[in-house]
Length: 326
Image (cartoon, rainbow, N blue to C red; front, top):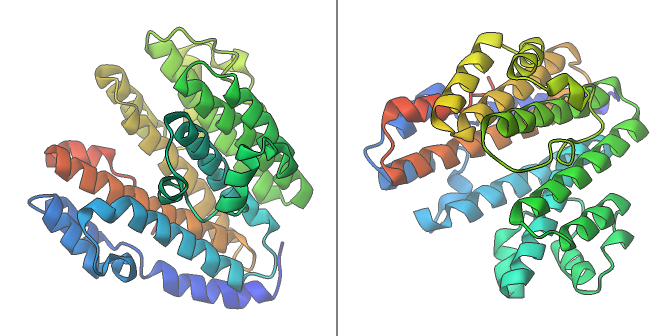
């Protein structure tokens, strides 16, 4: 997907990346005495346009709006957007999951909107209407299959599994249609990392879940290749920093806190995209990487504020924080 238009887009992206969290801004957030002080510090960050007149209770909405605004900005500057659907589709399935769960507990139309992202490929109102009319398959076949699977779920986590399966199928289809090597490699890496983390969790925790049932097709690894902790660690080592993954797995096994492992997975994925962005300069990859960098920043902010609210010590917080995309 090389295109002369990306010369302009990537020059803009370089400027936008410079506005994301800096090391000094992150240190200010980490060293804040409490959640209110950390929230106030966000007025000097990339989130400033979304903070005015808001309180800390508004943070989830602030972060969703910033992601949606970044999606609109990218869509306006690139000559072709299909490849980016690999990113946007994740929000479609998140929104579908949100609507399904909201309907189960009787939330209103407005309450559902408050919980959805506007960074997907499908209008939220259209998605709500499709759920109410039982016509989700008319939007996307993969979404229809995920919806049917979720409706028959007896456990909440089964809805999450159904949405993940639907997203991975849709992302795989888009990558195959675009036929761009980086995009295919990215989707494969995302699915592999998801499967490795899920299978490790099932090996470590006493969960009565069928390991084959939660395995996602479309990656490069088979379920049989993830039968032991040692095998999983070996695959991780080939996908990123082996020492980082070892530390994350050890911490996970000691505490049962999956956040440490999720952080290592996200860091490895961002590093993978950044490596390709540095090589494929005049292509869509740096723009793709910028969106991940922005999403990475929102996750960091979310983690810091949550840690301050819970009284988490600084050492633990630093262990959970994702690396800045710099």
